[in-house]
Amino acid sequence: MRTHQKWLVAALCIGVAGALLSGRGTHDRGPGVLAPDIPHQSELAGPAPVLPDIAGMQLTPKARFAITARVLSSETYRFDPLASLVPVDLALGWGRMSDSDVLKDVAISQSNRFYWWKVKEFPIPQREIIESSANMHLIPADAGVDRLIRRARTGDVVRFEGFLVSVTDGKGGHWTSSMTRADSGAGACELIYVESFSIEPPGA
Image 1 (tube, rainbow, N blue to C red):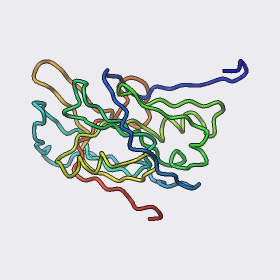
Image 2 (image 1 turned 180 degrees about the vertical axis):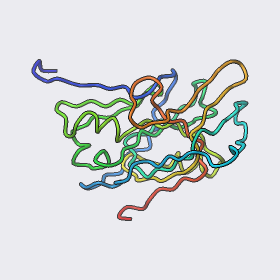
Image 3 (image 1 turned 90 degrees about the vertical axis):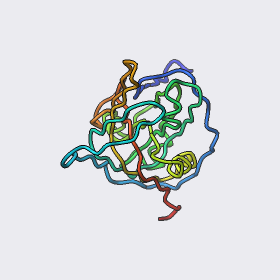
Image 4 (image 1 turned 90 degrees about the horizontal axis):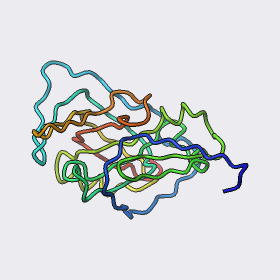
């Protein structure tokens, strides 16, 4: 690295060891904002729905959640303690973080349940990068949703709906979703029980 180049790095999620690269490849997209809307989060109306236990873990819904976003990166986990519950993390971007003209100047990666970005110079303000992208831990509701999540590639535009949740494992372990898109660092990831998932065809 040359001395005059200043790299800025942000970790947007807490880490758990034991990741493998997904190897799903990328989907090249032209310039322009592909996902203009911010994620939609709403309070639960009436009694909270009862979600099924998954992999021996109890899920408690915290809010309804829906998002349309561009996949910035995807990572499959097979060996960490949460892999049976959350097999895939997607780093997602919306607003100008879904625009290839911006993303060409932002290096993005994932590992150990972290989402990392770095820049030489900011193409958009730092706060906008933080508030327009996130690493999301996806809990598939069924095998069909799981297959679609695993199919998503970098550059795809995806839409999904479900619940932000907290999780307990019955042994004192507890994991809870972020409830805001404005945070960063440890604990800033969304933990989502995904009821429906779709990948938009190019040009849609």
